[in-house]
Image (tube, rainbow, N blue to C red):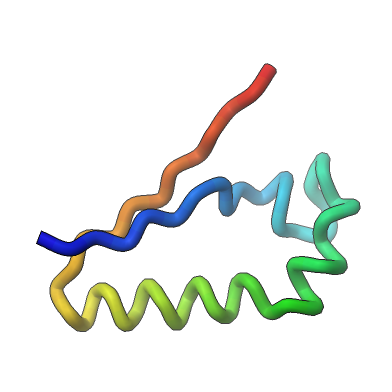
Length: 58
């Protein structure tokens, strides 16, 4: 079985208004969300499982 595992695509890290918004310009510049969406579409079309994993740190 194949799977795509996406780590830490949480709003606080990848949106302009998140708690870690300082990372957003680089996320936007690199087209991270567009690439993630394309990757998940490819994986799903191939019948792969897609898992989004959030890592929480206090």
